Length: 139
Image (cartoon, rainbow, N blue to C red; front, side, top):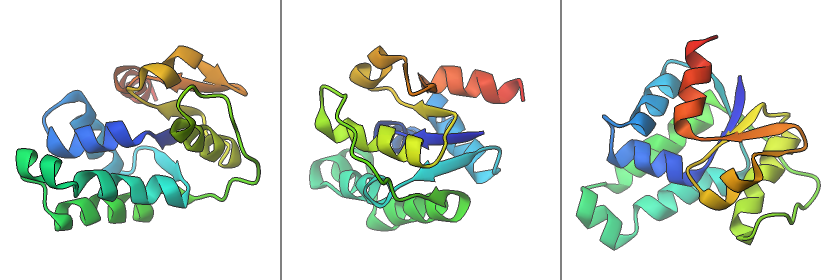
């Protein structure tokens, strides 16, 4: 299964390793799916995780953030979106849809209410982490 994983899911997975999103990180390490990402998607988790307030609150180090980025890069597939997409209320979310289209992803996995409200985009499902894990279990 080819999926784009929203930054909010990756950040949650790293800071809450025993959570539902943490299970997605375990599945990523086990290579049970193929993450599809663009360069902005690849760099955003490290940028978010190394923000001083977040790093202090959760004890995340720069090495932790870089390890997550490395894992995504090693297990995933880099795509270069060829068209701009402007459908999300928050323009920052459009990059996830653009990568999904460019990478022929089956789904975008997100906890973002704005993305989830779309339900799908160009036949690409937009699903919660819970729905994604349920799908993986049936494969």
